[in-house]
Length: 201
Image (cartoon, rainbow, N blue to C red; front, side, top):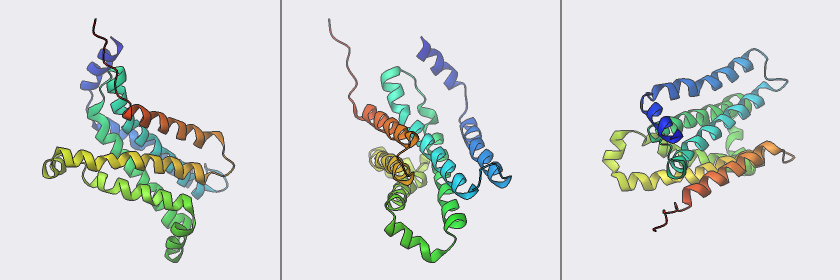
């Protein structure tokens, strides 16, 4: 009954509020960064907060299927919006690193090669880029459903790369990136777990 009520309410909601509301946290962190609200190292803090938002929305995107399969909650119509908001935050996270943190083009390639967390993060970005570029209905028609679905399985290793990037980035192994890694493992585990069929009497 609860799942049915959620599904009825979801059908009445357009997708645009997901984009609008999804961008608000990023605007808030940009405002804090510009007004001195992110502490002594605002660029590092902004970079990290935007990265966490990207990871959160990608987790939400990939949690849509397990919710439908195991809880009967159908939020499939919002999955594209969640994925695109996640990619938008990935772009912001990357831009802050490139333009505000590094600033020197000569250092970018050296950091990608020498720092494992940056290597992993760039690999995740490379996997997400074709997914964002093929997120339209026209792309699905041109590619065909089967090929499109195969391509978009890159979201699985991209999510793993995002969690690993955060886990390696933060020194000292604090609880937060470990919790994110556990959530990612749980979401992906549920996606590959076969749904139990009802027992036949």
